[in-house]
Amino acid sequence: MSKNLFKNKKVLVMGLGLHGGGVGVAKFFCEQGAEVLVTDLKTEDKLQESLGKLKEFKKIKYALGKHEEKDFLWANLIMKNPDVPDTSPYLEIARKNGKQIETDISLFFKLSGAFIIGVTGTKGKSTTSGLIYHILKTKYKKAFFAGNNGVSPLELLPKIKKNDKVVLELSSFELEGLTQSPNIAVITNIMPDHLNRYATMAEYTEAKKIIFKYQKKNDILVLNADDYIVRQFAGQSKGKVIYFSKAEETDSFKLLGEHNLYNLSAALEVAKVLKIPTKVIEKSLKTFKGVSSRQEFIREVRGVKYFNDTTATMPDAVIVAINTFLENFPDSRLILICGGMNKGLKYNDLARIIGERVDEVIMLPGTASDKIKEGLGGYTRVHNVSSMQEAVKKAKDLAEKKDIVILSPGGSSFNLFKNEFDRGDQFTKAVNNLK
Image (cartoon, rainbow, N blue to C red; front, side):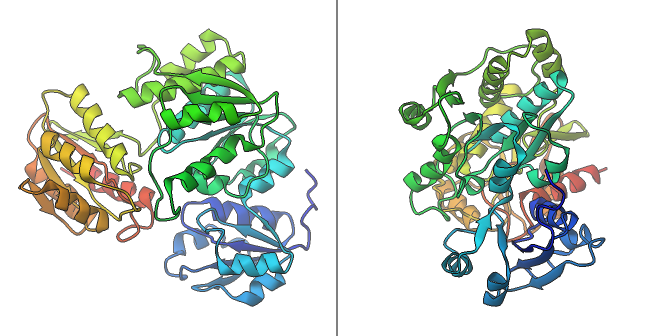
């Protein structure tokens, strides 16, 4: 890729964010010699962490705490953060004035020339994409991983040569607006989620389908045979369709839960397509410890085990966590830290499972928490807290030897935390401070 491709181009980074992607985009264009202006509705105070990572780039200009029409008219290229909906009035202004609008994902597809393996799904995409990458790097000297994991693929562009293998974890937000699809597309499952952004479940599903919408006949689509919605996609694909189902349990694979056997199976199908030898796969499975913040074991304190499952931002994911831990620790009591903001989802089933299977519930504040409490009815073992530090202290006070404490929220985090990872980090820090 030419180093001068964006030299002197006026680039507006719309949405710096706190998860790392926006920082990567801004760095890339600075290094390319572009004029960079960053705009974000968040204030300077809230963006301190991200701004600190850009302090060496003295020429970046900022418009924080607001968006202004003049900035969108100034730019040649607008780099949209995936969290910004396409319906933004500022993007409408840009379109009317013929401005080029891209995301880091869309631009990466256009510029990289890489062999791309894309993974999406409501749940399981992080573990599945992480496992595929782990297998690939055992086989290939050069393999790359970016996308919804906080790494902007644009940061990788200077290192990537034609046909290098790149794994992209792709959320529905990151798929919006793409006009190209991966060489291998994987869909783990489709469940109700993000219904505060999408008007209907059908609209959310359409966003997910973009991962294979532009595939060609030599491309591969890997689908979950046991997911009714996902199975229907087979007839809509131009590429070759491969199905996966739940893998057999193996001593090489250490992750708990039936859901992870599905993630394993999806990754194995990709490995087969790429003709990776069985010995290489077995070797890589033995060293795969999972992805942080997904049912991640933090530590044991006085016989009590603590797990971080902060990325469980929907009720179905919490149900999976509850069932997984009780199946694997049948003699343990379960203490659940949950709650947060509702994304337009229903909580009746989660409330029922909590009432039947959870011994103590520690509830963070939020609209999702209100729904859970409403569904719990006469369940009396709810302990309301106002911070993560208070939640972990309460868990310690309630816990007895052999108990399991899990943070598995079932809602989004923005009322108390910067994002779900900040929530998980605060949990981990509080647990590590226990004596």
